[in-house]
Length: 221
Ligand code: DC
Image (tube, rainbow, N blue to C red; front, side, top):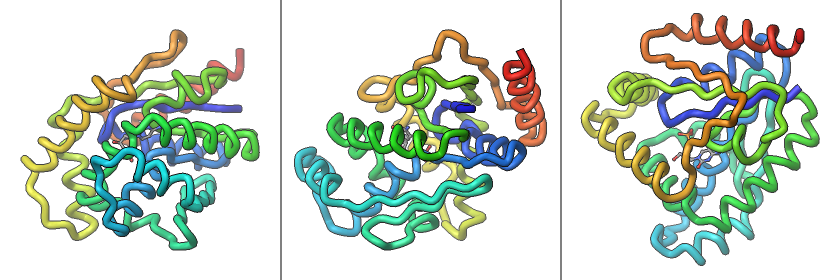
């Protein structure tokens, strides 16, 4: 069984995907972690974020390993476990240049399909999982929330991780990423049979209950 959850940054898709995978006891694939791991490497190696060919070269020689379980995706790049280090604002800012480099997207999409093949049954989340990478999935979800809600959620996560960031800065970062993402490289396409959920006024518990219900309805058919 393949379940895709697509949505913009801060929509709650990661938490929802992780909790749904834990509920179903199947692995969870966080594809944003792959883009983030490369962004982390680019920042660490001081690579010019405007130099697409250099970013692509870095990606080709990077060793990216993912460990996907029902409650986690852990990511290693060149042997270093960066699962926590990829969550900072600095890395978030560097992900757009990575994600808009088409050659990098092609490599990561290939890697996601390989991983999916190995995993068999899994929940995957990103912006393009249902529309591009696993268009043949059994259940497609698209989750969204309004910008203010997403900004508050992301700000709370960063603060919980000890980052002293301003809510307005987080909101501006999300708005900029939305605009870039939509225009340039990964429009959030809604697969024909996708189930759309607006999580703005839902608790995570309600979101997960809603996902579980739809999965049972679809699979039960
Ligand atoms: O979901 P996230 O915030 O961890 O994603 C990090 C960045 O990677 C974000 O700017 C969107 C991008 N991304 C993408 O282009 N395609 C994916 N499948 C997953 C993430």
